[in-house]
Image 1: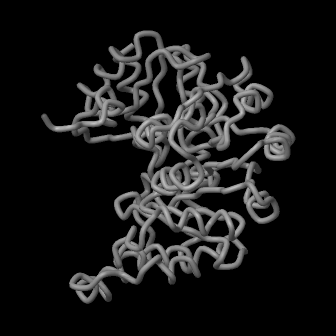
Image 2 (image 1 turned 90 degrees about the horizontal axis):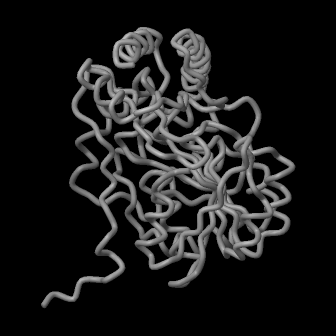
Image 3 (image 1 turned 180 degrees about the horizontal axis):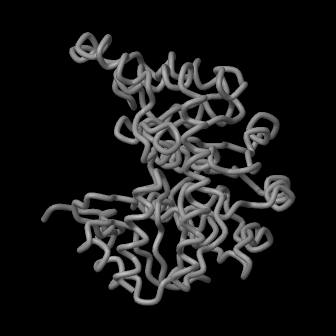
Length: 345
């Protein structure tokens, strides 16, 4: 008999309901497309990289991230998307059986990553106003506390005072996931990664920078934290092409990224108005999506897919209930989604 791990038997694959749709608003990526410099890099450097391994531990990408984030190279680690950096951090800082605490609801991969590493995921419900329950998180005694801000799927941000209190009192590492920070007015906690010894802040090139298909993420923290994550990640987490395009985007395409993010935010609020006309009440959001409580969300989501629009369906979210998460981008896509939702309700 093959000795499969007992702890893996009831772990599902990550597979949200979807089918190919003309309008896909389900994954919160940059719906305006890839950054301008990507085309040049792929044309000029594409084939020459394919037959060789990339440089170990992404030195050029680390230098580009360090310049962008205003830190030393020793403060930077990278990975195959920020979710990979999160996974590596769990392995780096925790032993099997240790507790990982996180607000609930939040990024669905965190408890999954915890279980895959034989850790104990402990969700702590957000407060009624969707703010962090700092005392509840601290009461778990977790050696690693994960906070996503702006939070996925709610879109809400952590208050600075609450997050600083959490960092000050946490018994171990506080991992702050800022995959959506480019869409947020304030709420950037990179300064904590620069100044606190127990904070790791993760970012991604998959959202505002439009490089989801290349799978590039990064994190900033104290050199001692970064060194441990580097051990967990291994030498080759990026393709050479992925690293080259990410480097060019960080160096050349920040203004483009900021313009896309600003338009996504503008259209997010325009979408909010359209949803309210339909009698719906989207949650406050500082990300490039809206979470919309909708009764029978699964049925409504399926009806929208039949109309060639894909959104993310959530059922029974803590403190929210059934809901649809709608990614925001160019307005014609938002208008199509509103029309499909109106017909599906």
